[in-house]
Length: 126
Image (cartoon, rainbow, N blue to C red; front, side, top):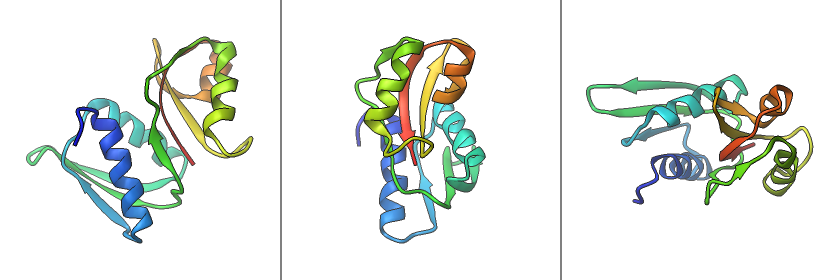
């Protein structure tokens, strides 16, 4: 395991989906990862997640997930450059989400372009 909690957790989710499992228990969590899960749930990629604060773990029920990865190194982008990275990481227009950490919080690449703000690329999924 590395020191990147988000990368490890997304990798565990992808491996569980490839193995045909519906649920995955992730033992290392962070506030950033919980925000990522909120967006993934809104987009229908996961069904639900349950945080167990006593064990400091989280159980995720997967839905329509094909690919999810952390973006490393975490590029800092201007609003005009978001489209370039969207084309690099996502398979087609309208498919998938690139997550951008901005000064207004974590948001999708579409929301960041609407707001007209750039930020740091965190992860992508589709």
